[in-house]
Image 1 (cartoon, chains in turn green, brown):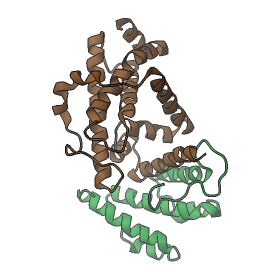
Image 2 (image 1 turned 120 degrees about the vertical axis):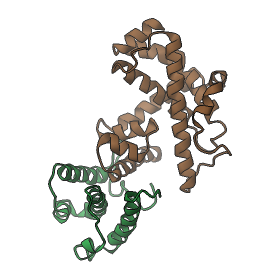
Image 3 (image 1 turned 180 degrees about the vertical axis):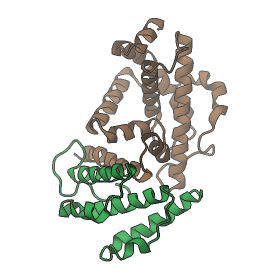
Image 4 (image 1 turned 90 degrees about the vertical axis):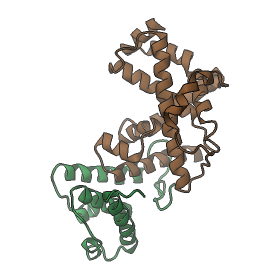
Length: 113
Length: 197
């Protein structure tokens, strides 16, 4: 497991094949990205709420980072303030946002990291 | 060999198997020789050879190697593909080193590109794994890919093994870099979970 990544095996049993927790989050993220690239602006909070409670933290973290990248790709310049109020109770996620925001911002300007 | 190449282009698995038996060990030896000064903690020569062979089979079926007709053409093509894989692996290892990974490189650092091509034929005689080892490796490669299913995880793993980095995979699949990173986490979870089991 890479640093900072969730334990996708947590709460799952059995061997072989991708862990259920990962599959649920991954497929939700894929749907979100597909909708975005299809011209929609899926509602991040709604996507999280529609997931089982036990997957919401990982899903929020993934969708947040994904959306930020997609927004940068669309020429937007998202800032932490776009999200802080919406996710005031998710301190860790917001901290993660700051890190990824900086990272992606550097990439957009062409500076390797 | 000419006969097998013609059948390989038609997607004949028996032809692929015959060529595999004939060339895989030599490719592993070539990759090992190319990696020997760069590698200290990661054994990737098999990955390079497997990936090169897979590229050959896919490309032949897809008609990408129109001039491929005889054994000399085939060997030159395999050497080119394998060398490219090795260069990509060295680049990856260089990135890992700079990123604080466990790989420690020699003084030649990341990929040295076309300079390696001059003496590559002399290196083909490098020690090779036994046929049993090669067969076990091939089975393990297939087992790991099969564990990922038929979807995007498998595709990302295949591209990664072919030497593409996250940005290149994202571009090829038309998805976000974060999506590639997430799927690589899933792949590690599957393969790491298998090792724990």
